Length: 320
Ligand code: PMV
Image (cartoon, rainbow, N blue to C red; front, side, top):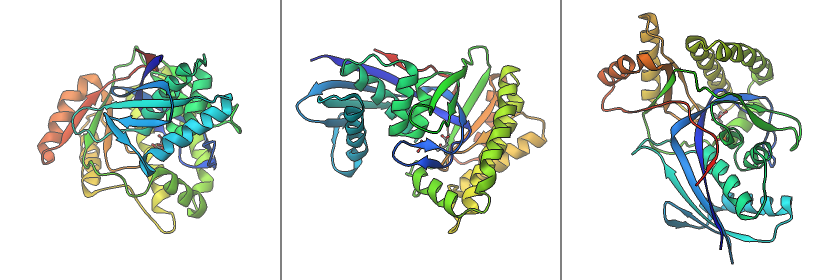
């Protein structure tokens, strides 16, 4: 039986996706923009099989944990009129204890491998639409470099595309791992609560529109400082939405705030480091590669035993 292996990398949003207009199709309220990262990726093989089965890092996954994968396979079969069942084997390649396993790379790799195993030849746009239904941010992991996800208003119009391949950029990301535990409010639950209860949510589309214009200019000018400033402010505006939800919630751990304060101190001292944070406690620091060493040293000096992983822009989907 033909086995198809696809590799997809994680991405970090500089302009965040936060809120869906359609739960099932995962249509977002707004566009978003991310950088695909090297080093962190998922490798997934799909082959036709008697029953659907899902292995993660060589372990058979059943029950609730596998449901999202099986629901995705059902959607895939229905969409493309396919009757086959699939054996899925995934490996998460994340540097030791980085705590950064991601549904973005997982569903991007799954989409690419299963489509090919079923004999479909989907272009990248179509793959992005498909991956989106597995996890919103997965739509962006189909592409490398800087990627924009167009919100659209239905399945056809909501997909990601590469904005800039980042090949000439010296941008680097330091992932500062403060906590490896799973977040206790999933991004979907957090998004819905914010959308329904934050008095500030109505401003969010305007915020995104402005931030997108500015960051795209900064990317084209290869202005890493500006990219970092815009991304940091965008992330804080997203987290301000969670703080203003009712009931209020947040994704920060004490160490998250410590890292934020250390980065702000660096900025005051003329070091060009900026941060962004997703729906979890870990912090990603955005900087020019020439500043990586000093930023890492300063973080290591002020934190107890931190895990810091350095990465650069990564590629889109590849097949093995
Ligand atoms: O696609 P999800 O459900 O993993 O949600 C991603 C949400 C954020 O990471 C916070 C923002 C983003 O655009 O990736």
